[in-house]
Length: 69
Image 1: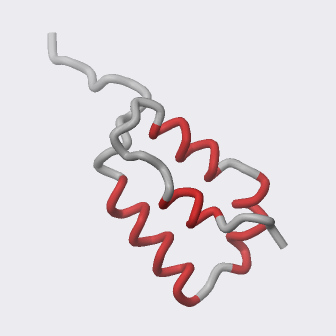
Image 2: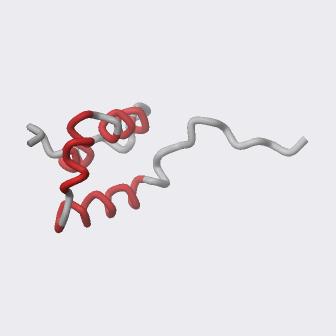
């Protein structure tokens, strides 16, 4: 069992931080998340979906959109 709940880690991130995108990515690609997510259910499942839905607009794409010529 992971030592820390990734949802709690995500919820403690500062959304205004310029490193927010990297921090979210690091958690979602981390070993604790990979061990946690296959067994997620109930309130944790609802929580992770709600959290990611809320922050998806705050996470900027890694590539700038193409500008028309």
